[in-house]
Length: 448
Image 1: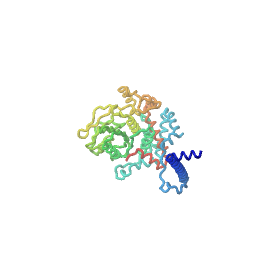
Image 2 (image 1 turned 30 degrees about the horizontal axis):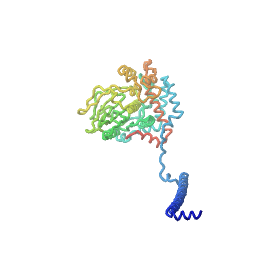
Image 3 (image 1 turned 90 degrees about the vertical axis):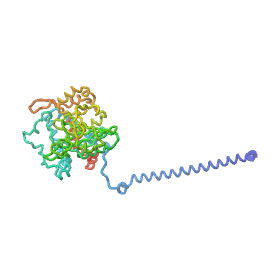
Image 4 (image 1 turned 45 degrees about the vertical axis):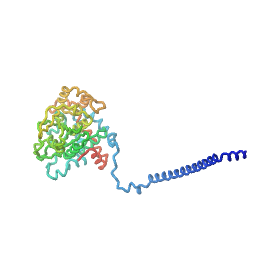
């Protein structure tokens, strides 16, 4: 057998040499792979040890602690700390009982208002609002009377006819509005809602939109006051409205949705004490538009607010607009008011039903049903819960209220409910979150 092997080898020298070479190469390759595997395994172990060392490091010497500590960041769904609490759920449940009795509703409203008036948050943003403007003498005022120590014959101690008592102190200033706006935009996943701290903030936003060629939609809640104690102070947010802006195909459209408005003329040039809310807002808008960005202007003449609740209307109008890309196709305009040059402001005479939820006059709602039955009965955009149409919402929020003469009259308390719930939300935020966290919430939607 050995002789046969020798003979085969001598006869096939080249084949045997190649076979031996391949065997040697294979062996060396095997050893190389085993060396690499062994080396990588050790490296992995070193990496694992390093990670465990960093994770379990003493907080005092951890690299993150070398940087000055930052304020605690809000949770992604920060509002759940409020809305998931038993206090919040009980408060919303109690509304159903309070709403059955006007006196109970009035009493609970006063309690909530007192709590808000005594809060540090309210005091910071009420009497200290816009310090630079007060310091420069733009406004002089005395502290308003305490709404809880009014004379017995004051109308604040009686039902107000169409809607029952809501003290003037109940309205929130712009930082409070920003808290609610931040809550609603994140919870409802709404883009484009901002709260303007001043009219200058509105001007800046309009200017930025006008100069940006991209298609975009925005809604701005703006606070304004025509004058206080004889001095014009446009930054005092006594009244609030929604400014709805659309940039489409290079064309800019701006609608002023004022819940109280009825306008026949606009003053866009002077600074006299005769200026009203509409004049001041329109001046701020035009200041942000140059001759190359002349907008289509519209002004709502649908006066839905009779007594109180402008902030709630502004929130509702803004959200309804942002949810409805066809807003400008669904409104009705009739006539226009001429302003500077050939420019004019079109009159909005019919709004989509989402904007009518808080209407404080039943007669206007009856006229809306009679004149626009299709809009009146169509499903509301964005409403997916129990009530899906305007009449369903009205039925759920209409109460038999006592009028000044002692009679009974149907009243729509949708705005009352929203005011109480949102004010409660703000108060609970001030107790749940730190000052830095409150600033973070406010700055999500407040523009200056």
